[in-house]
Image 1 (cartoon, rainbow, N blue to C red):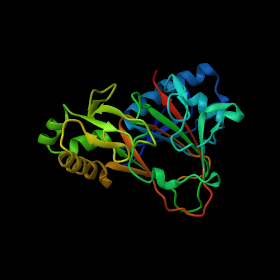
Image 2 (cartoon, rainbow, N blue to C red; image 1 turned 90 degrees about the horizontal axis):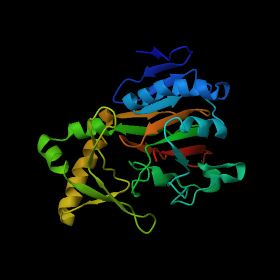
Image 3 (tube, rainbow, N blue to C red; image 1 turned 90 degrees about the vertical axis):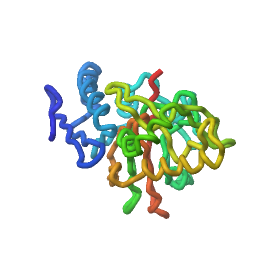
Length: 273
């Protein structure tokens, strides 16, 4: 059911399926700081409920992107809290926006690096809470992104496995490309208290305290459950679209099926510090 944000023409329409909602009518550049703050209260609530918000045809400038991202977290960075990117992808620092990462196939960015189910930057002690992604130039065909609901993924596991992993931690990271960090395998949603799976194929490499064979097989069971199609939503990008995803409760997968085409996007990574 579509809802309207108070005193505005901004609408929020849930997508069918496990997660996601479409936000239309948001024009960041036209809003004063006070008006944006008022709108953000309801956007933050919608984000907590739907986990991914899509802004079709929003055409956010870098300034708009940073301004909107700051409505959802206190610190914005290109990738890690310090700003650096493990792929050495550039930021827009020369244009005055060091907190925005540039992902452009013309700069030899390798799409295969995100063509795996993952949650961003879990190899750090304080992973980001979200990302605001702007598609400047969409591929003519292909290049979709998928997200998976990790609240529902945990619920899809059998009760004995949920109970078992509830007290375990896992190692994240792919040295030497990244650092490493240890995180609980199950977390809680910050506002609802729902239990959430915090394991991803991209960065989780082992479970603390288990033997290698035990860890490998249990992680594969978890991955196959959390990546099931019924837990997902899929977005077909058009140039000018934006998406805001919650990094705490979702995974995502950038489909690598646009070889030879130009694709240029900007990402602002959101931290709550």
